[in-house]
Image (cartoon, rainbow, N blue to C red; front, side, top):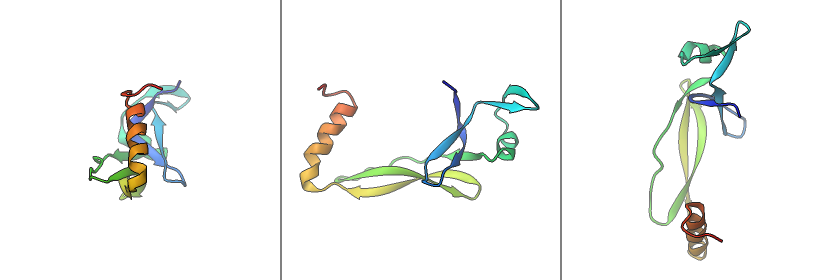
Length: 101
């Protein structure tokens, strides 16, 4: 499995992040680098992460936007409807290993 840089990426047409490979081919040679210019020259941008907001009764999904030459993480807020609360709570417990089916 190819390893990827979490510092440089592209954003696809669906707003999904596509991380740059750690190993680039430069002049026909596989090279490990963390030099920003090398990634920028290949169409990758620096990645800017943000902390997920927390608000009672809501959940958030991450999306990515290209802003000022950076891949910036944005958050979309979604209200948890009362009848969905138990479903989401169970899904979260399963996801975090608190409940095993």
